[in-house]
Image 1 (cartoon, rainbow, N blue to C red):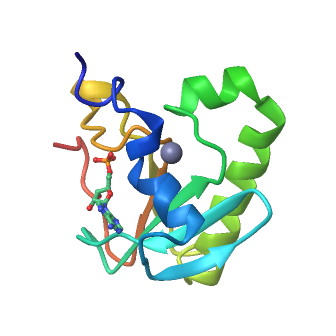
Image 2: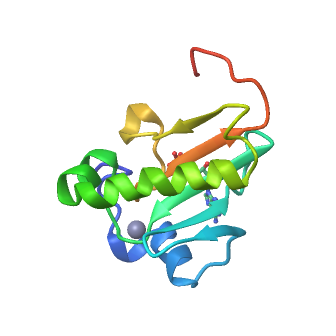
Length: 122
Ligand code: AMP
Ligand code: ZN
């Protein structure tokens, strides 16, 4: 039993946010994606962007629907623009699997900005 990859889709937190069953601070919506503020922000701008469709991680999304993967990235870029961090720079993170620190098994981009970022990440 993998704590992330064996989460049943019926229990998916981000599917529930997309459906409106769990409230979130939504900042943008497109036909493909929903963007909302992370409940535990790690930077002045910390927005999660999720496809409406449930895919486990970036690889699963790219494999199942590469056109959606492309539109997803374009939607993340639009949120960066709207949040005022496109020109200043920002970080887009896909935590993936156990070692990657993924805790919600529905692919999501973390858009982080509004401060300088260090490298390497923790
Ligand atoms: P990850 O660890 O990459 O899977 O990211 C999951 C993110 O979801 C974490 O940064 C959490 O703070 C965030 N999160 C968990 N529950 C909620 C929620 N109800 N609304 C918004 N963000 C959440
Ligand atoms: Zn889901």
